Length: 117
Image 1: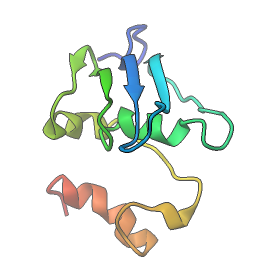
Image 2 (image 1 turned 180 degrees about the vertical axis):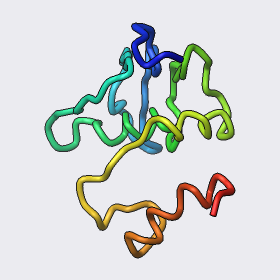
Image 3 (image 1 turned 120 degrees about the vertical axis):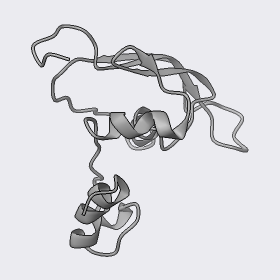
Image 4 (image 1 turned 30 degrees about the horizontal axis):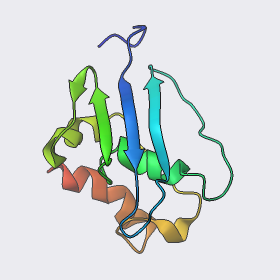
């Protein structure tokens, strides 16, 4: 896809999410489109920013709706591998890193997970 393209690289359609055991959804009916650009997602504590980002990169599965990358519906874990090569997220606090106890191990995790050394 051309970086000057006006089409969406990431498209969230009618996304709803509820954590197990919660009666109220975190959010419902979210539509979001991302072109080839950098954006910031702002909101109050507990408003669902991190949850939405985790849905975007496939770490959480929405209760309803779909995540599309370059027009293709991401349904399975393996579908998100290509997306994760181009779309990423940073945590606000270093203690919230996903896997590794050090920055070096965290930085190396991505390429190693893709089979690169």
